[in-house]
Image (cartoon, rainbow, N blue to C red; front, side, top):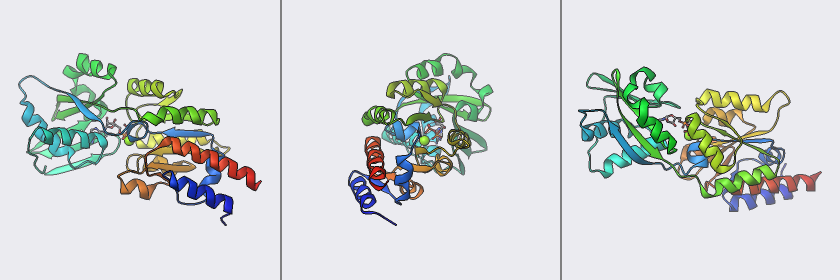
Length: 292
Ligand code: ADP
Ligand code: MG
């Protein structure tokens, strides 16, 4: 049943862009002990922009970008969107690849004129293939807190694309507010250790897990919940983070612009504002005090 205090907390939150699908989530929020945050789209804007493109000697850059854009137009990952936009903005026309497969947490795989293309993380495209780019360039880009996307054709890494995403203005304030409430913020990301560490530092998060596949995110959440059934929230997107959202005590999605996020979350942040989530936690605690 819904008490007047609960109803008021739900409608107050809704006005601030925090949609609760059920009143029971208020109870969970009131007792929250940890909040896990995905990086791309949650702590960062999720709108990365391409900053650098490097191709190996003898490679035609326009042909390279045409293929990469054509493959990435199939994926809805924020990095894929940014790459596709970058290629289109250069006036390069795209084509429909014969076969493309999305590999969540890793990248995309495609078949083009008998060649296998892989675009994504170094581990995914093949560590042994990246010799020329691993030394120097990729390291330099990561030092600049850029995400490096590797492009392999057959047995070789033929290019890298670097993207940069800015941290959400309110993320830092939200993290401070959660800490003040005694809720431990934890960064869980598929990105590299260096990038994760830099982002965590930038927003004031002490605990972070890098290089996480969707199933690793689930494992970390299970471990945080522990045997005593601690209340742990997960904030992420509805696609890559769907298993982690389901594993958490409460799954929270950044809702602006994605139907999947709206469907997947127990709570949807329709204005993508983490600070308003902290406000709802405060309301939930106050409501608990009124009831008890
Ligand atoms: P996060 O949101 O924390 O970066 P994801 O699980 O969404 O984690 O993705 C993990 C990593 O996989 C990305 O940082 C990127 O390196 C790679 N990746 C996933 N999808 C794509 C894609 N479509 N194109 C290029 N890289 C991708
Ligand atoms: Mg993500």
